[in-house]
Image (cartoon, rainbow, N blue to C red):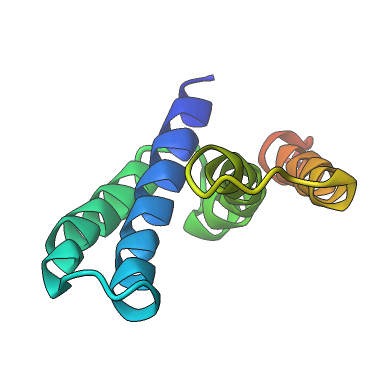
Length: 108
């Protein structure tokens, strides 16, 4: 379960870092927003290295499902846009896929 915590930290850090760039380019915020955004993206990258997975590719693939679920929460809590049923269905499908990738039985 420790991996879940690292995945969630990575997702929050990635979303925050990317949102900083969005805020500068799309919302007209100061370029200074990019400094904490870059720091946040560094936290994202480091957090993914802490996930319990034998291969980086498997960790990154499983992270995709966590990221999608986290973005739905961000969209609702930070941007004020409530996810609709299709957002929730898509997020559930992605989480199911992430679970299979990360915890599926492996030969050998």
